[in-house]
Image 1 (spheres, rainbow, N blue to C red):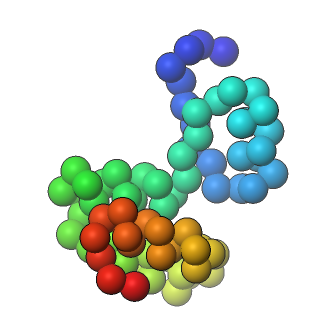
Image 2 (cartoon, helix red, strand yellow):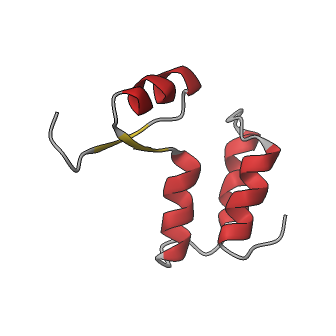
Image 3 (cartoon, rainbow, N blue to C red):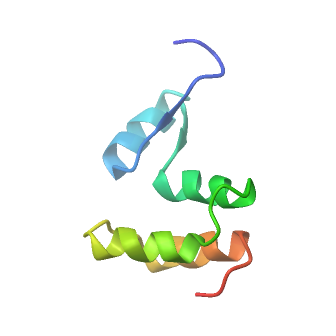
Length: 74
C-alpha cells in the first residue's frame, strides 16, 4: 500500500477494517462537506435530504455535525 492514499467508504464494517490498516478514509457525507467548503455545491442540506429520500441512511448526529461544519441549519 502506498503512503498518502485514501479510500471512500460508507460501510461501517469496511471502515473499521480500513482504519485498522491505517488507510485514510472519507465517506459520502465527508465528500459533500468538502464540496460545500470548496464552493462546488450551494446546499449540503438539500443533498443530504435527497440522499435520505433515496434510502441512504445518515445518522442524525452525523447530519447535524456535517451541517454545523458548513454553517447550515438542520
